[in-house]
Length: 122
Image 1 (cartoon, one colour):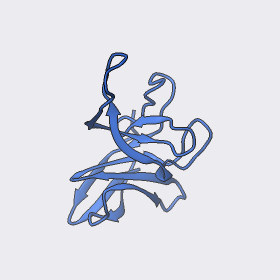
Image 2 (tube, rainbow, N blue to C red):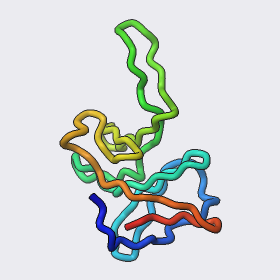
Image 3 (tube, rainbow, N blue to C red):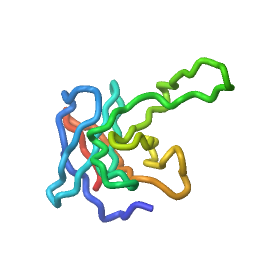
Image 4 (cartoon, rainbow, N blue to C red):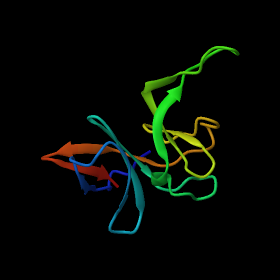
């Protein structure tokens, strides 16, 4: 549950390129800011596994279900953030780990775009 006292913080210009970016809030918290086309997401920039900076990782589509012997394909409609150290994958919307969604997650933040700026509720 999100606290209602959280404020919107201006973190970047909308001209930021597609991909994964590190932004730091005034209080020192790191945020992994993700952009793909017109969509934006923000996650806490620390992997719960061993503390890697998630902004050093990559964003890609989720692996689509398949049977043994079938070609593996990615579903770009469901992007995930992949940790650069050990490949842990996190849903960019919820922050939940794909391997253990009930127990492992990173904090996700609400994002809005206004007047050419990206804002995160933190």
